[in-house]
Amino acid sequence: MSPPSGFMAPFTGRRMLDELWRLVFEELLVESGDSATVVPLLQVCKAWKACGSSLLYRHVQFSGTAQLKAFYEHLFFHANDGRYPGLYSQTLTIHTPAVGFLELSHHVPRILGYLHNLRAFHAPDIDICSTILEPLAVVAQRTLHELSLTLCSSESDGAINLAIVSRFTGLKNLKVTVNWGADSTIFAIGRAIGFRMPFLTALCWSSPRVAPVHEFIVFLTRCDLPALTNLELDFPFLTTEGTASLQPVFKKFGPQLRHLSYNVPGAARLPQTVFALLPNLQRLEVHASAAALDIIRVLPDMTEEVRVAFDLLQFAQDWLLENPSDTCLRRIRLTANSPQRFDWRTFGLLRPIFAGELLTVSFQLAGRGVHLLDGSGNTVVMVSSPVVSDV
Image: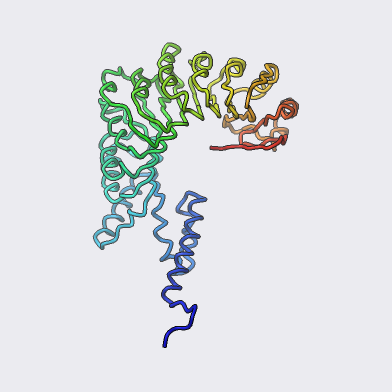
């Protein structure tokens, strides 16, 4: 006897229900970005544990040597039983400088041998040397989409480190930090060929502790990055003379940039020298103190948002005083983080007089169709068609 129309076998129904729950868990994981989110749910019943356990490996993070060692042993003994949970891992993050170089060099390459589907590797606060970069390239040079790391300052050849990074041709987001304060001939950066990354859209180039060697900046001019639209430059110790090396970088990539963020206190004349090379810039973020009028007078016509980390009131007042007519500016935002970050909801209680001045300016800006945003992206005055981006 054939089963009635519409009948579903119990096994098929069970599989569909498991898949449905897995999709629910997956959505929760995507929203939170933390595998710990699904842990309480997996303790509800055996069925939920079976269909969601693989998600525990999606984003793995380490904050010490003991965790690295335990995770390697976990992967090793599972592999002996024919199981490979590391294949579910897509993000590997190491975010503590307390992990020593020897421990990293010992444990991380062995762990990487089990993670063949990595999409992101983040170690921004730890020196990463070729002993880790090469194994990472072996397993993930084609799958990796995001990479953020500090290149080791104890190795003598920066060219090798940069050459290994160039192997990750599928990257979409790259953050490279260096603390190379020695003479550039020691690191021989000039020997490294430029990156060829056709999908890279966001690049952060940083030397936060020391003045960057000239060749580290010039290296960018040898790169082929046709999809690059977001550029962040973090050179707080770059000298006034050294800022001249930035000009060729903007000549090459300026027309394609949509978002620019820079922290270069020594580049007081950067707006006058490079903004003309940024005809399509939509968002500008300035972290170092700068003369507001110097920025306003040469602001690219297409710029819709300016984020400043200095005197927001002065910038807003100067913008009103200058009264630019041919501008697309719609948002002015304070980005500085501090214990008393500017927040429209609480700022009046902390500094009522200053808050009143900001409120007055915000109404004046509203008449020009411009938002004055706090550190969280909120505005106290609504204008037509508000669009606020946190990207």
